[in-house]
Each structure stands twice: as structure tokens, then as C-alpha cells.
Image 1 (cartoon, rainbow, N blue to C red):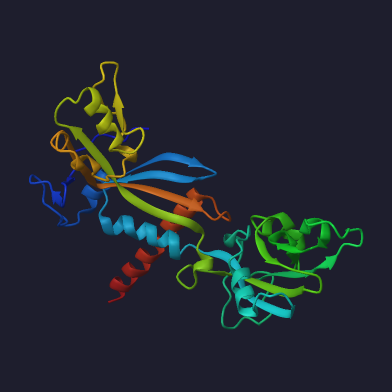
Image 2: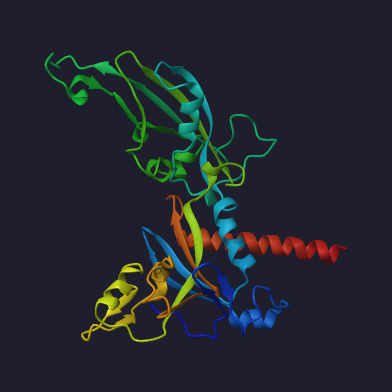
Length: 333
């Protein structure tokens, strides 16, 4: 999908520095104007699937783009295991390491269906703000295993503890509202520990709603980042061997070569801006590299409890709430 054409303020990428457009106002921001902002703001969805969300945000200031990134990382809530009660742990993993590992298990539970725990909440929690699980696994030797077998799966039973071993313990009326598939771990094959005969785990786990700014385990995204849209311009025609050399200087698919062995810009979007072209004197003047200063390419990969597009919409809601609270403070003064 190609992005809309606009009057684009550029950052030029020279061999050893980044230079602003001499016809532009440089790196300083204009005075903010709401009407101009609304006219310039554009959002285009490039990809939205199970692997993640990629969209373009155009006509915004760096602070606004970065605000959405930070909100998705640290202020969109999710459910995660907060407390681990260890009744028995005879494995080789220390209690504190095991507890930390349990907290990082991604849960399917939709955080929008739960409330935050408050200081007034009881330690046990309620059905509105708490999920409970148990993990009981004991490793034993298989009676039918022969002495000459070397595969641990044939010798031991439950010698590997996976996230699928967690068992949900419904509180109150939770069993009537949620199914086990709605609140269990997103992946059932996450390896937690390896045991040997005589080793045993007996844990009770308590999951609550939280924010990534309090602990990274509550962050709903695996990654959320943005980059500026690359812009590549050929200053002259490049043919033959130089064309193929030019093509190798950029990421795959960025530079194409036509039937006359002449290089052309095929798709600058996914260029990594490595500036390898400046390594070759015969090509150094053939290309102008730049980045569009107000065109941000966002990539959002969800951990799994919320879809990437929902995470972004939740970030927008958080920002609106913050703005409303700030406006109320100003008006109160």
C-alpha cells in the first residue's frame, strides 16, 4: 500500500551526518495549531494480522508519536501472575527464580473484563479483580522403562513442566462467566522447569490486572516501535554492474533493475538506511537518502491477550483520559 503524497519535510542522510532540509525549518517545531494539526493528521493501516499491526501515522509531532509508543508499552493494562505461593519446590530452580518465571507467563484473560486491585481489597481478592491457578506436578520413573532406554520421555513421567500444566481455580461465579480457554496461558508449550524422579512442584498462583510501568510482565505488547519513512532518490542513471552493486547496498526489494539493467527505486519503505552506498566512490553521488520527519511507521506485536489494533485503540483512550484530566485541572485553576 502506498502512502499519500504530501509536502514532506525531510531529514537528509549524508555519509557521516544527518542534515535538515535547507528549505525547511529544521528540527524545531512550529507553534501548535489545532486546525492545522487536524488537517495534517493521517493514519493508514498497512498490515493487520495475527503477526502484528503495521500502520502509518502522518502529520504529527515526534512527542505525539512517542506518546502512543510509550502508552502501548506501559499504560495499557493486562493480566499477569503477581503472587506465587510455593508450598513445595524440590526442583533445582530457586524459589525466587521460579516465581519470577511464573510472572512472565502470558495469560489470555482480557484485562477489560477485570478491575484493578485496590488497597482495600482483601489478600485473597475477588472474582472481579483476581484469577487463581494451581500448578501441581510430580516427576516419577516409568515402570515400563527399560534400562537401555536413553530418551527421557520414555524413562520419566512429567519430567518437563509446561505452562499447559496450570489449572485454573474459578473464584465465585467466574466459572459461569469465563471458560478455561479464556483465562489460561496463551501458549501451552512454554517450558517452566525440568524435573527428575522425586522432584515436585506445588504452587498456587494469583493473577491481577496491572500496568507495564509497574512491571514489564504487565506490558501487553511483545514490541511496539516506530521509524521514520525512508525516502530514496536516484540523482542519475546507474547501469550494468554498478546497478547490481547499488542494489546490494540496500535492503532486499528496495532497488529494482529493469530489462535494460538500469537501477530504479522499487520500494523505499523497508530500507534500513545503512548508508552502505557511500562505501563505493563511483556510487556515492548517485543517490540522495532521506527520511520524512513527520511520517511514522508503527509496528505493534501483541503478546496475545489483546489484538494489536485493540492495544492501539486502548492507548488512544488512555491519552484522551489524560488530556481530559489535564484540561480539568487547568479549568479548575
